[in-house]
Amino acid sequence: MPALPMPKTATECTGVLLLHSDRDPIPDVPAIYFVMPTEENIDRICQDLRNQLYESYYLNFISAISRSKLEDIASAALAANAVTQVTKVYDQYLNFITLEDDMFILCHQNKELISYHAINRADILDTDMEAIMDTIVDSLFCFFVTLGAVPIIRCPRGNAAEMVAVKLDKKLRENLRDARNSLFTGDNMTAGQFSFQRPLFVLADRNLDLATPLHHTWTYQALIHDVLDFHLNRVMMEEGQGAEPSPAGARPKKKSRKTYDLTAADKFWQKHKGSPFPEVAESVQEELDTYRAQEDEVKRLKSIMGLEGEDEGAISMLSDNTAKLTSAVSSLPELLEKKRLIDLHTNVATAVLDHIKSRKLDVYFEYEEKLMSKSTLDKSLLDIISDPDAGTPEDKMRLFLIYYITAQQAPSEADLEQYKKALQDAGCDLSPLNYIKQWNLFSRVMNTGSQFVMEGVKNLVLKQHNLPVTRILDNLMEMNLCVTMSCDDVVVFVLQAIVFVVGGGNYIEYQNLVDYAKSKQGKKVLYGCSELFNAAQFIKQVRKQDTCKLSRQHRTKNMNFNESGQFNLLVALCVCVCVCVCVCLKQAGNYLFYDL
Image 1 (cartoon, rainbow, N blue to C red):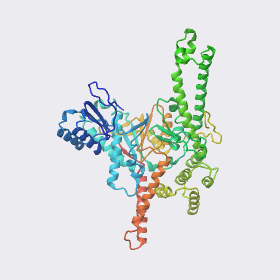
Image 2: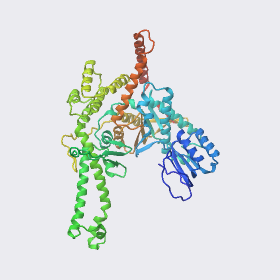
Image 3: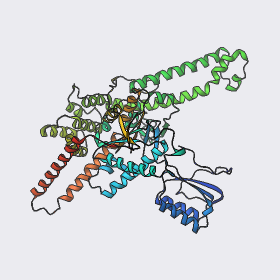
Image 4: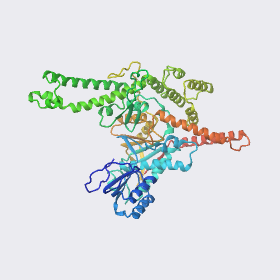
């Protein structure tokens, strides 16, 4: 993120305050605002101008402010006689969040506004869908302005991804037409953006693949996101889990929450976040053993020289013949930081391991891998669902939904009833299945302590296979992309690709693309999504979809049809029309090409 424009005068920073908090006037201090240009925020800025809170105002808007809202600020400044105090107004085009060097999302706080449920709910109005698409396009436009590149857009036909592609195409073209004020010319663009190395932007719809978000995973980062409280690269955990119970009659100890930040500065995290969990557990143990060896060496040197109990200041004052000890002591800050990271990953990995063992997540992962790769199954699905020691009701529901989605042929009604009974006996909520059945109809047409005790956990090896979004990218990367430039068709060589999933993404797809990019020498792949959810959050949204569908069905029962058969006939007719349209679209081609 670029630095915010600062006042030229040297002024002591007075602090960071929330826009809508109670703030006292500081009339001799400049103020820097960094806000979204929402109606509520604009009103508060206007109120600050009227109240003469600050000496001057530097307004930085995360996305572009509209002319009408800018006029509101101007009117408020004029009325408050503060026009000269509004020193600068900037559109920062930063309406997205970068989680990794090669991963970004659009929303976090208000992600429900552009969620999978919001996009796919059955009772959505056209105006609501337009607003959702505009929100997504505004953020993507900010992303490409910040990237300083005009993309080559590719998307599938007939879904939300196409709507986003059309709107983004229009917004980019409109900005490019005004050469004087374009955000993609002059200093805003790096050299060669209109050359033969423009980034490929692949838009995919979440409905393309509903199995992957439900999949139990086996890599470190994705597992943390699946089983722990992990948001914006921060893990929050309860301390004291598994501790001895309090004595009878005593007040139970309050569990404290521990927070860990997993950042790019953490070399262990950067190296192992995409590794299978057993490898991570082994690496943590190796790091711990190395640290203990270094610590023991310092203690040994101090013991030889009779310096037990001496403070570090005294040690550093030793003569040249103690250089070896001094060198060891000088590395203590680095050693302490290493110990902090070891403790971090020991605690996090131990918590993940507890979930794996208690829920038999390795069994679920292996079984789902076989389902998704159409391999031979060595155990009955009913056996896993009926096993009271194998996972939570949610784990069982995820497994069955993956089976239902990936099955080459839908189970018979008799088999389905048997599965449903087993799921209900296991305590599962069947409402997600009702929605998946409806979706599937159309998709078919188209240790604890310092050591990790891994007993009972299979040391599974990840099979390298491309997920649907990766296969789409691979197909496009293998093609010669022909685009129109200056009325001529030219071939563009793609060195950078960006895959974006409308409706939500996950760390499983991200890691799959990272692994794919490693096999493509000289090419870079970025992954983005409208929101980032784990399986539990996705199932919650799917459950809402079914509730919405049932509510709609309840309303349709009150419609004035002379006979129920007329309504059934109408439904059947609509389904037939949709099937025909889907078949025609499929025959017409899988991708719609937007070239800039």
